Amino acid sequence: MGTISSDKVPAINFTKKDVSPGTSTWRVVRTKVGQALEKYGCFEAVFDDKPQLHQNMLGALEQYFDLPREIKTEYMSNKAFDGYTGVNPPMPLFENVIIHTNGLSLVQLERFTNLMWPEGNSSFWVLSFSCGIYNYIVRLNKYNAPRTKETIMGVVPHKDKSFVSILGQNDVHGLEIQTKDGEWITMEPSASSFVVMIGEVFMAWSNDRLHCPLHRVMMTGDEERYSMALFSHSKGIVETPEEMVDEEHPLLYKPFSHSAYYIFAQTKGAQKFESQIKAFCGV
Ligand SMILES: O=C(O)CCC(=O)C(=O)O
Ligand SMILES: [Fe+2]
Image (cartoon, rainbow, N blue to C red; front, side, top):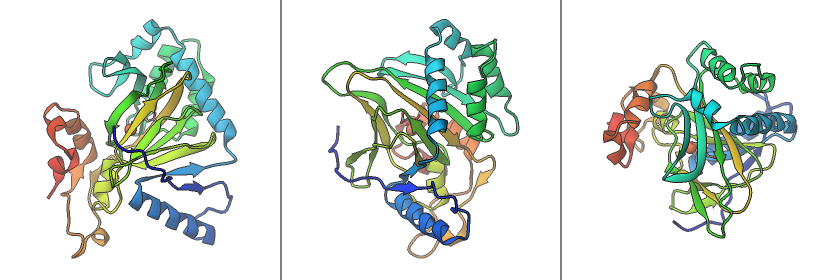
C-alpha cells in the first residue's frame, strides 16, 4: 500500500482580511501557495473565520445521504461520473453523487435539489451558492465507517481531471496524497479548513511545473467520513503560456479542450495509460 511519510502538507492561513492582490500579505501567501503546489500539488487553506460555512456544508451532506435510497436513486445517470452512484464492489464504503452545472446556469443544481426535497431545502441551495458553483462539478461523498481494526480503501488512488479541486470534510480523516517520492502523506485538515489540490489540467497548463498528486481515501475506525469536492473545469481551450516554456522546460502538451479530455479520460481505452493527460495531448 506504500510507505506513510511523516512529512506534512503546508497549512496556509487565508483568514487575514488583507489578502487582497498587491498587498504584502498577499505576496507572502502567493509565494507559499506556489511552493506548496510545486512540491505537493496541494495545501490546506485555513480559514479560522469560516466555521459556520463548514457547519452548513456538513449539515447539508448528512441530510442528503440520510435520504432513503429510492429518493437518491432518482438522480441517476447513464453517463459515467454523473449522478448518484450508490455503493459499488471495489469501494464498499463509498457512496457519492456528482452534479454537473453547465456554464451559465444552475439548472442542474436546482433540478437536483427539487428532486431530493420537493418541499424545498434552503440550506442545500444556499450552501451551493456560497461555494460559487457556476463552472464547477460538485461531488458529495460519504464513506461508511469500516468498524474493523483493518484499514479499508475508501477511494482508489486517482488524479483529479479538474483544473483545481477544493475539498471540505468533516473531522474524520482519511485523505492521503502521494509525494513525488512515492510516499503517502495523511492529510489532517482542521475543522474549518479546505484542501486545495491541483488537477491534471492545471498541471498540463503549467507545463508540469505544478505537481498533480495521486490521492486516495483510507478508512479506519467507527465514524463516517463526509466530504464535498468542488472541481473547476475550464470551458475553453487550455494552452500552456509561453512563460512556462524554456530550454530547461520544453513544451510538454499541445493545446486541448478540457471537456474533450474529461470525456476521453472516462473511456475504457484511456484507463490503460499511466498518464491519461499525456496520452491525450502530450507533445
Ligand atoms: O473524500 C475525499 O477527501 C477525497 C475525494 C476525492 O478524491 C474526489 O472526490 O475526487
Ligand atoms: Fe479526487
